[in-house]
Amino acid sequence: MIMDGNGRWARKRHLPRVAGHARGVKRVRDIVEFCIARNIRYLTLFAFSTENWKRPVDEVNHLMGLFVTALEAEVNKLCKNGVCLRVIGDLSPFSPRLQALITTAEARTAGNDRLTLTIAANYGGRWDIQQAFVGWLKVQQATGNAAAQQVSPEDIDLGPYLAMAYAPNPDLVIRTGGEQRISNFLLWQSAYAELYFTDTLWPAFDAAEMERALAWYVQRERRFGQVGQPAQAIAR
Ligand code: IPE
Ligand code: IPE
Ligand code: MG
Image (cartoon, rainbow, N blue to C red):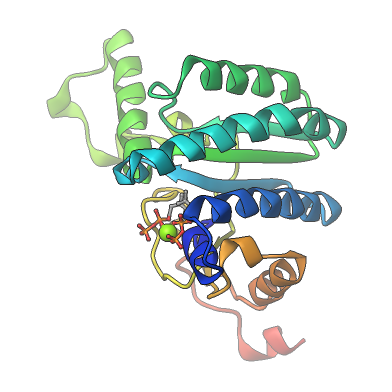
């Protein structure tokens, strides 16, 4: 889920951009509940990109504050609802307090398996591929396999080193807010994802909108590079 449009939602109401972010957190709650009710097993939310540091410092600080507040307020409920929380991204620039909250929340919810809720924070698809390559290379070096001239592309199996190695690749990527771009979300993992774009701004993306996205998704014929089903097979 590329949760875009918070700022525009607020501007339309003559509110500060941060009011849109606050409302956006409420939507997260609703969509998590929706996924639990509908037996969706993996939900991944793009909360803060590696490029979002370029925003005004006040907005960045506010977003970090919202992250802290949401973690403090929601972890008990996540536990009760069987949600396993994971956070992906380079967490090293975050405050020690936020890092500690993330570690605790991940540990407390680690045994849950009803829904795996991943928050991508200071995440970028390019960063993910780079860090996966570093992970792969370290293992090669440690096992004495790293002679660069002998490596061919298919030897580089990044899958196990990507930040979401614990999850299947996304089937459906939803972007709210009207833009039709990936903005550095799960670049590697989205290779065959269905892409759903809606003009609805994230603070207005409710269960009915989610139903519409799913109804669209189930109509897709996924081919993964192969030839399609014959027409009569589809009709049947
Ligand atoms: C998405 O909303 C939230 C984040 C990227 C953190 P925006 O803040 O990008 O809202 P718009 O796109 O400016 O409306
Ligand atoms: C995408 O939104 C990133 C997140 C939702 C966290 P942006 O608002 O940062 O994307 P661009 O700048 O419009 O591409
Ligand atoms: Mg935006």
